[in-house]
Structure formats: C-alpha cells, structure tokens
Image 1: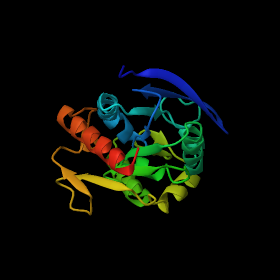
Image 2 (image 1 turned 90 degrees about the vertical axis):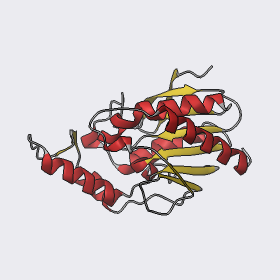
Image 3 (image 1 turned 180 degrees about the vertical axis):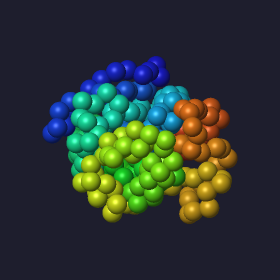
Length: 220
C-alpha cells in the first residue's frame, strides 16, 4: 500500500498532521518541503517521490511542521527553532534508522534530529532563501509591510533565517543546470521556480531510486 495515510504527531508546541506512505517497519524517511511559497509548488512532486519510495519498500512521512499546511501555528508567530524542535520530536518517536529527505530550504529544518543520514535536493541556505523572498516581495503589485510571498514573517524569524545554514549532508543531489557541488546530478526543471504547482514523474521516480540506493548503501 503506497498511501497516503493520515496521522498526527506531538511536539512541545502542540499536535500537527502528517501523511504516511509505505511500510511502517524498516528504514523510514521523514521528508521536508521547502519553506513558504516553494512548498506549494513542490508538494505534489514530493508526494510522488514518497509514493515511488514505497514501491522500493521504504516507508516515509511528510509532516505538516508548525506554521505550515494545516498547522494552527501562525507563520507570524513562527521561529526556526519551532520547526527544528517539531521535526526532531517526530523523528524521536520513530526508532532507528530514520533518514531525512529535504528539498531546498527544507534542509534548514533537520539539524537538531538524530538521523541515520541526510539526503538533500538543491539545499538552500537561509540567506539565499531571504534573497528569493525579498525578490518576490519587490516584484509584488500588492506590497505588505510584513508580507513575504503571501507569508507574514516576524523580524525574529527573518533574523533566524539570515544566519541559518544546512548541517552536513550525507548525500547532495542537484539538477544538471545547477553547477554547485553535488554527489549526483539529474536532468529536470526546477519545479520550485515555476509560477504554478507541478510535478515531473520521470524525475520523481529517478530521485526515489537514488534515495533507495543511498539508504541501502548506508545499511538501512
């Protein structure tokens, strides 16, 4: 069964929703979408990856982190520490081995968790994220004093992000158009740059196979 199955998890700030895919035994992946508006553009793509992972016999979880999805936490009240605490709390309930799979700025979230490995797709620093948000904000025809691409973000969160960097990855994957260092590159379009949500079945299957092979090499 490839799911998804609806579930919830607890952290110090409350209870959040999550989706489960694939088996509940053996190695499992906890996936993190990019933060803010890029999450909407890549959610269908990440779900397709997790369904494909289930086909490789690997279970996965896609959580709504605080301030995202169905969370009751408002983005204007959010701090980066909340995201990291909630992620670590979820991982702590799963037992080992657990692996993080992140896209873009999602790589800023998993630093406080005890993981068997971290797989990144096009990881993004907090400073790079803020540049993207400010560029989108400057191009908006409906300026908002606290608004960044439709999200109200506090000065405290912006300060958190300004100095945030992903912790060391076990494996970094990039698209062929990205010249930065990577362990592997694959052809495909950067879905996070599109104006509308989308997916890429070939790329999602390819990346799921990459993740499955990497987990097998890690000894999962």
